[in-house]
Amino acid sequence: MRTVLATRYVTPLREGGSLPAIVEADDDGLYVLKFRGAGQGQRALIAELVAGELGRALGLPVPEIVFVELDATIGRSEPDPEIQDLIRASAGLNLALDYLPGAAAYDPLCDGVDAGLASAIVWFDALVSNVDRTPRNANMLCWHKRLFLIDHGASLYFHHGWPADYLERARAPFAAIKDHVLLPSAAELPAADARLAPVLAPDVVRRIVDLVPDGWLGDVPLFPDAAAHRAAYVDYLLARLRPPRAFAEEAARAHAQLV
Image (cartoon, rainbow, N blue to C red):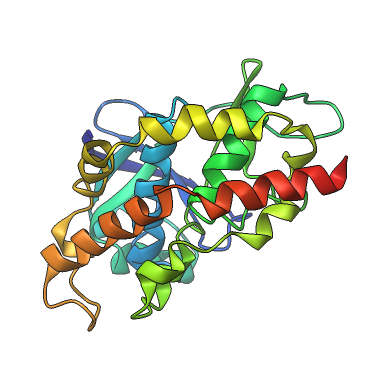
């Protein structure tokens, strides 16, 4: 993954609960910056990184994800003291997605998604336990007539508590998939399961989890250090991917109940 340096704070995106912002970087690109100092802290950034890169590995349309080095002085001209505090609390390494200028929010009434892509997205969101792809908040954009998936910080929500039985929980279905905005179109879930699961081989999962900076790990009492914390993410995801996959079966059942 690339690392860029934020050179200009452009504008806050106030529709997001964690107050993400558009920033310009030293590669002249614009990015949607997710602040480490926001409410859910580095857990949300870990989920954004791991889930987003898993999606990209599956060939799903996720904007490029980059690390962003943030200087605390970059927001000195921002008049909102809450945002100034957020920037100061986030000095150092943060995460961002490529900004898609002019993108429109997904509208299920006019933006069709074919069964293959819909099934792949539903399968992926069930895998990472993404509770944030509902009709109320689809977290999808249409840009140049293509669909893009954004905002995966609500995924992997189990890690906000890291229960001791996390490997048992990894085998559980994901009941909230019944509320997925694309579930009615996901008519090819068994085929998606057969096609996508082999893509996330153990070496692929480890490579993605290895991207998580050490500084974002090691703060969970259950694990003695960052290495053990990192290994737990890998073990959780591999346990979730091991057949039979309850999350995929639950998604197929939920779709069948709609037909």
